[in-house]
Image (cartoon, rainbow, N blue to C red):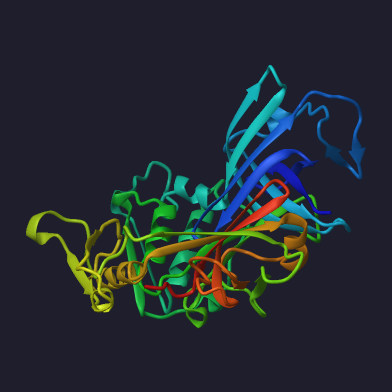
Length: 399
């Protein structure tokens, strides 16, 4: 039977200070957002319960204040199989904690490493007393993934800012080139996390993830791998090998329930993207498609703001990316699976992976009652109890 192991330690170094098993907690990971972690720990001692150096909660934790300090510490969670093998699921900075003296329970809230980059600015290292009024960060690359790497790489150069992150090589994210260019003026005080979002939002923009793992050469430490989608995978982060098979048509299926929801509020056949500026001088681009109107939809228009694009080509790419994202209703299918069966069948599944759902007799996915095979992309995973919720979307939305 699998169980969850929670780790707490120093964010700046990745040093694990405490491992805790079998506590009340929940976690979620998403392909385009920061992880979320919430764990409740009973801190009052009820007797010695230690096994192989791991605290079996509840147990006394004299250094709990030091090991869960918001912004200074990290929290991470792993799925542990019957043989003790760990699959690290989510992890990042602790941002909140609350202690209830009536119950003796400490509740710790954390988010994925992506949340840290929302506390960092796009600035080169400044000299003592220097202000960022006359500095800029400018990069070019064959793919936008290289610029995403440069954003993190520059942030890592600051004293105190070098977190335990493994960056991809330049070759792995497209290498040098001039197909894409981004300039960030220092006086604009852009946020690194926001600029990563903007790179993802343009047409052909890369997905970016930060995935925790435990060092094999020194298991006292946790690190994070920066994963970046490249053109070979249509800028998407995907697994190697075959898609995961989720079969609800067989007896004793690990798939317990399949729920589906659709949202058409974001649909658009005509998208206008705007950059920074006022009045008629404000840069603008338009992207349009007849796909929806040809399928019987009325004309739907949208305005997309928030891009850092300053050149017409970049702004046009942003508009095209927004149009593509709005060309079909947002359909999310959530698959509830047995926790133990899920980790046996998909031990290394991550957001971005491909899966095939086999299902029959479903009013939206298989309305005629005949078995159907639906290719899906895993958008997120959520767990903490005896089940795992797998949020998915079809690779191509249906009209």
